[in-house]
Length: 145
Image (cartoon, rainbow, N blue to C red; front, side, top):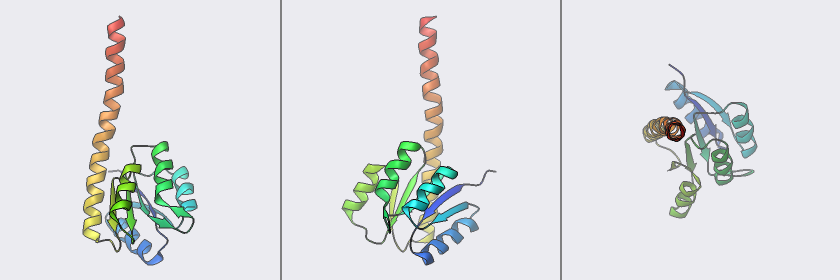
């Protein structure tokens, strides 16, 4: 079975290490960094199956990263972690393309449940995306034959 590749970005070293250990213990491969620059570099070098981003980073915030990542590959789910959660911030993150926003410190079981949910949803979305254009194109081609 293919391992899930997770991009994990947080500038709090303790939290980064704890979440990385949690994910690796559950069979995921983690690429970790602590800045927007790290996130962009790691995204380009190995496209993850999932991104987990701290909302506020030393060189920017998750919103700009979400926009770039969704422009590059809209099918990759993104979870945002924040120590400064507000309803406005959650709405902004979701409107930009994040699948979920969780408060820090993050509850490990909640994080794992959310990861499971967004990955299942992403698989269903990818299957629908793969089926839809081909099916539509095939119907269109056959209508001209």
